[in-house]
Image (cartoon, rainbow, N blue to C red; front, side):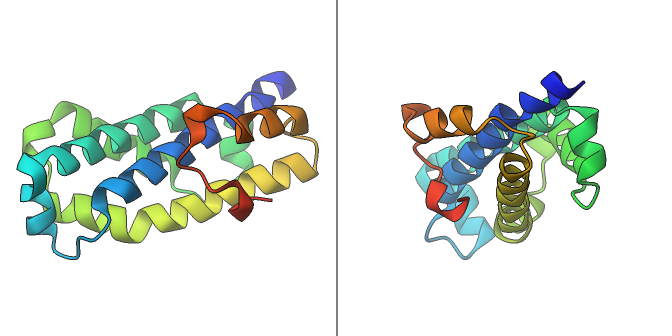
Length: 147
């Protein structure tokens, strides 16, 4: 179980990367209807894809991590992923926008806290974290906010 928990660093980083991308897509928008229509709905649809990706990564997290950090609504995140995946056309643009503006900053902070805590407690591998910092894949993560 411990080794599976150690792989959760990758899933946490993927969540942060997805949030970073959503922040790029939603940057400058304060109106959900304008965001929905912008760029022929590309930013909205790209954000939905990243929200779906966040739910996928949450599903991959070990039970140990989910139990250790129960303050995060893991089940709700996964449920939202299912709504996006199975009712794509019917997704409420207001809820999506509120999720981006309100819930994602909170999730970002919580995931950063998990990474910081787990590295400090040797739950996550420091060397893997350092390698991730120079990875081109994680270009939307501000690692200075983590450690």
